[in-house]
Length: 170
Image 1 (tube, rainbow, N blue to C red):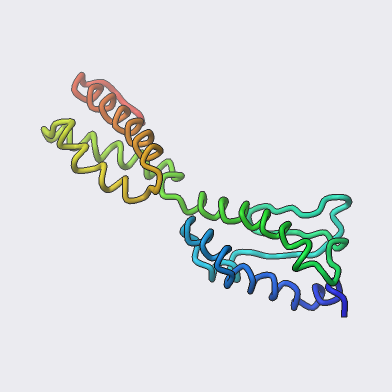
Image 2: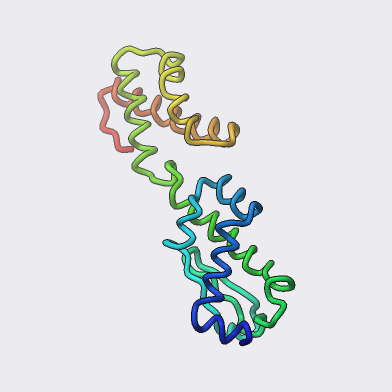
């Protein structure tokens, strides 16, 4: 049975997902982005179809692979197309899960810091108290510092508006 026929009865998809879940290379990438490998089964669909000249594509939930790539050497010669789209899927899953992609979380931290200022805490005390909480959500210290500084700046502005008795919106 050729790979395309197998793909139609899901054994191809199962084999692809099994490689993604068990290979040390793909597992380590998933771990790096904090995506549990069981999400490959629950949040990733793989489809074989005619992509009209494209080799593969994905949208964060689905990887499509062109049926022309499915020959008896697919896993040796063409699996790299799956890897490419798998990385896009991982990044999108990671971004969807990233705590600070939610504007409400950012606003909540801004208000939390502002409350600390209103309660008489110094900038140093606020940084010492809040920064470690935010830092726990980052692997990249530079990105953490940048986002924190932006939130701290908004918090200080909000506190200054509060002190002046003005109306404020976040």
